Amino acid sequence: ETTTMSLLRLVVVVTSLSCLEGRRAQKEKDDRDPLISAIYRANERDDLYGLLGLRQRAMPAQVKAAYKKLAKRVHPDKNNDARAAIAFDMVRDAYEELASPTSRADYDRRREERRAEERAIARDRRRRRVAGLRRVGANFASFARSLWRYKFRTGFVWVLLKTLLA
Image 1 (spheres, helix red, strand yellow):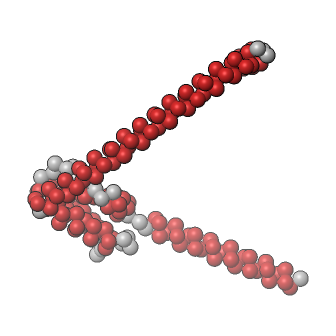
Image 2: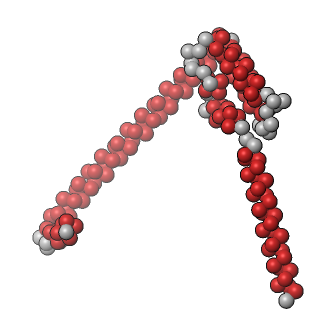
């Protein structure tokens, strides 16, 4: 009986520890700033304009204003999120890239090349999908014709249609 009690105590301790860990993880998740999460997502897409919240045709003064506004919000001294320092570095790097006219032109060229590549890949996928659907349609049509020829003689199709429509 003591073994059963010790096992029961062990289960209670493990359960309470896992509950505490879950609460701790939820608290850490709640402490995350949605702005920093958006910065991380834009950085993953390598979208410097999106990272700063700008359009591609933004003027240099707009780039500077957006940088200053974001830098104040995500600065590690002002923001309690653990990821604030890295997000601040991302914002600073984006500003440095977009502030200089030559580096901005290079970035725009690379961005357009990447977008053209992505469009070509999507176009190729669509073509393959349509070709596959055509094959499936052709295969299904030939299957339906052969089924019709074979089963019509036995009355199977008539019974099937009758039951489906009833």
